[in-house]
Image 1 (cartoon, rainbow, N blue to C red):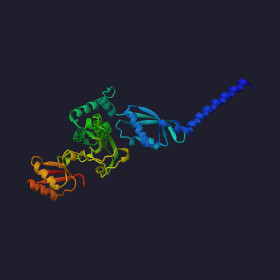
Image 2: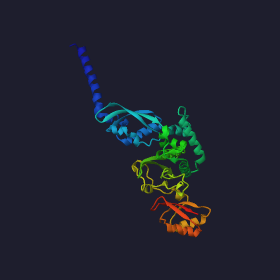
Image 3: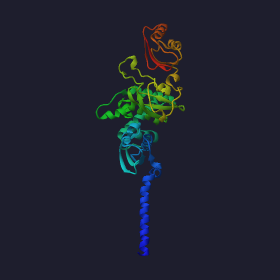
Image 4: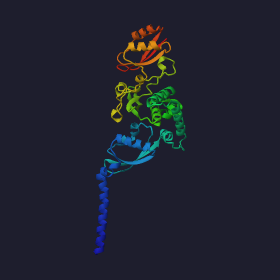
Length: 359
């Protein structure tokens, strides 16, 4: 064999060795090679998808490590869906027994385009429904945005509760019931739509907020966590919207029971992955505290009602250290010379909320 041929064989052998080394090296060291683009849990994947949607991306490629196909299929259940969702995914190749290269195809929601238009002035060209939503958000902000974050939260809460009926839209529009569009443009939504509407208005107003996905005794549920004066609070517009809103009864009035409450109050009726959201430990911005509608005792409440009645017949108040019963109510009615009295209880314990009516 000539010297030149020998050299050629050596070069070819080295090349094949490097090629094989790169292939097998990736298989054995994939977690290290792709560490900057490696996802190893549902939580990490949900966060990555949310980040891509917030950037308006319609697809992205990543590597997933140790995640089952069932986890990938169900990933939308772990998203709040505010900026969009996963439409489909494609497994490009299996790098090794644990690592997959995957491309996710995304659907960007109208919320994203509306937010970009309202906050950053980005024109909306090919999404007419998003343009209509953006204009509606601007109109609500003109009418309801307060001079403080607290005022804005209260006003947006009252707008959504007052303009949205709980339920499903019909026909092809049924899916909109889960969106801000259902609440703000069609006036009908379920909990996800209420929470999306609140989140959209708050984000467009520069108020930090999260949409919480959790559970109540009735099943899966969605609500908001909002930041006011550097403290976090729960807000549940769905549960503050009475189901029989058109009945004309006392129970049909909108409430503020779940407007700016802490974890302790919320956990009595709601459950959620607390580790995934900010802690809500304050009641400083609670609606009843801020509006001076929180009373220590029934006697304190009686003094307040005696000042307001007969100019005011219906009251929504909170009692801190004492529950109310029919005898207490009749005593107040006797002192203000009311001929009839009724009450509804919405919460209990140290945070007891009542709707009172005197005639």
